[in-house]
Image (cartoon, rainbow, N blue to C red; front, side, top):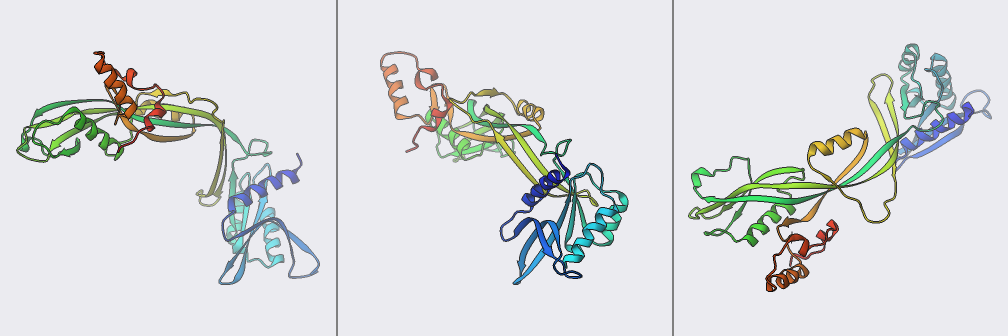
Length: 337
């Protein structure tokens, strides 16, 4: 591939990084000179134009996709383009794919020309570097809870910040349905964190004359669906300060066809290990809007209640498998009213 084509690749990428509402970004724009032969034109690799208080302001960017750091000749040549076209030197930016010599950085700084380095090209500088990526959706579900009913002693159960608490307005011990509703409320109201593992909870009475309090833990489990993909990135880094000026990331992932395959994730560490193995990871956490009880999702659907009644009337034991389908997406199919 010719140096001209390599140069155009970098120009197009730099132009893309500077695209923004309210500005015009042009590549390889030829501008008339303001001195000497007025018919002569100089080409600006990337020209950014914006209106400030009704006046057009130009920023010129020179791009060099070369195999070695730019020297002072490249800085002098770019400064000449700016001077010929009437663009102030401080509104010039030089971009290199391989950095600059120390003398080149000094020469640019003396003219107040910014020097940036583009990161994200492959070894041959023929295209953007491609890296493997992973997109994962982790469905979080309260799959287990274990509460103990204890005598309520007001001075013995002060809020110490260890427990996630819900207050119930009743004197006597709450029935199982009210306990399930309370835990479900803590989950969907995001009082219980969206992190895999155990979380301490308690159900406390509003009335100090009550004789009960429930304490224990709920377990949040994760079920992950993932898709492989690729990611390309472009970074403009300030050659003088070493700071990042701007970043563009583009990722594409394989289309998921058919039912999702869900894999269990048993802990935050297990999820972190998956992410660490794949440097470019996009992880989304989604709360499943119901909790798991011994006999099915809670709140139950009318269909599940009808199944439970039929089993109860027949004198049979009721299990989760009898009440619910194994598809976790069915957990969304319910009404709260």
